[in-house]
Image (spheres, one colour):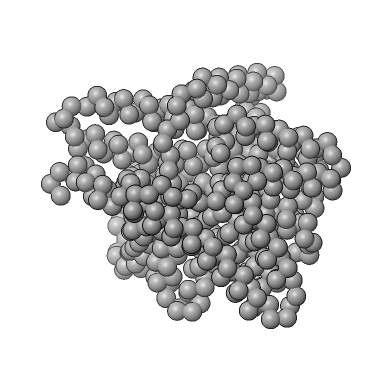
Length: 384
Length: 45
């Protein structure tokens, strides 16, 4: 199911109509029922898993008695289900078998459930009932491709729900921008026109062609994914909910650390809160925590060597950047460092270096296998 | 976008510009939505 299919606007039209024409309690039920029907039609296995997760997460985390043990148990169950699907798909891919697909939205709602469990344990959730929790998990705009929105923000919007024409028009505009990114920029400009320009290059320009292909794949990935996020955020606004942002100009950031604060924000902030903080509190080693976090991000995408390498590559990049920041303090100030032209040039160079570091990393995951990624690097850098 | 236009133009001009802007975007989407979608695979999520 893609937001580009004709069915998606019809689902959203039904959701928006019910949300603003029905009384509030009925509208909430309507949105839950629509999301449940959507999942049951497109991925019945996912619907069954989500219902199980919903009941297990909510009811086992209610009583304060042995709360820690019960939360660990449910969290383990959720991670085990997610890991089983990811590992099974990885094994099928390795053996060339067309096996099962990951249940629609599982990667996202699994993280939402863990977020709820941890926040419940820490006592940071506002008072709510089962219906609030169900409407949080069964939220159609973010159900299949994120962002991984947070419970308290969602509930705040639900409590203050009222018609807001500015929010609604902002939502329409955001959906439109999302579709422009996907259909025009990603599909036409990058994947058709740029691909034609690359194909027109002669064999003596193979390295340039490989370099441009790297940019094409990286830009296509960014535009498609951020376009999907725009559509989801826009649809959320149409229903009166402001969902967490997912991208904030990531390809214009001036270092890899800033890049990861601007790329897939809902996932990176989730991992910072629940993986980084956990590892750092146990080990007191921030560098190790960064590596563990980036590895978790890689494995969340796919259990495979290429995603492990990609996670480690980005983790090492962040650690090296942080070490460089320490060393930089000892370097004496250059006299012209504060001048305007120096700042502009340094900023431009930093953005360019970060952009290429990110694009080089994307080759690992945008090629089907690690061997093909290595062949790609060799084509781009013939002397390698 | 409309807010940004309103800080730079009169209300009437901003109204016209926003309609033109949305019309342009809608046209782009409708024209290029017919092209076959590009392959986009971002892990198994």
